[in-house]
Image (tube, rainbow, N blue to C red; front, side):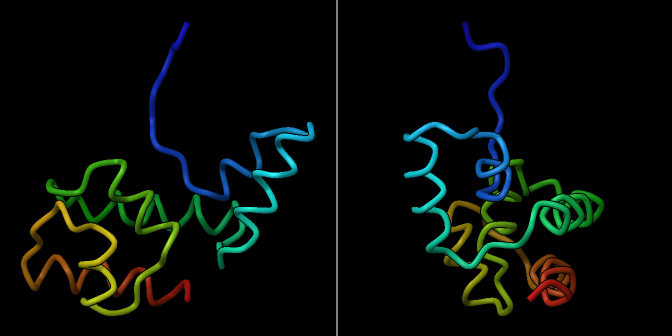
Amino acid sequence: MIKESRPLSMAEVVKLVGDSDKSEAIKKFIGGFDILDFEKVKKLGEELEALDIIKLKDRDIMKIVDFVPIDAGELNKVIVEVSLDADEVNKILEVTKKYK
């Protein structure tokens, strides 16, 4: 039975998968991406949530955390379903640039 459903960052997945053969394949796949360590992911997620941008849902924040966009073009590619105004984009990029 599923008790909770929420999006996870790639760093969280690596931390949660355990040590089975299947988890090693998952870790190897995720290792091909340039991801932040778990503590930075947590802090970045908290900073993005603190911006209180109503349009950003948890899944959007996790996408931003996974890819850490540094310009408006990258941000728009990461969260294509959300239409952000220039001020919102700038607020997000101010936060993400600290982590790249």
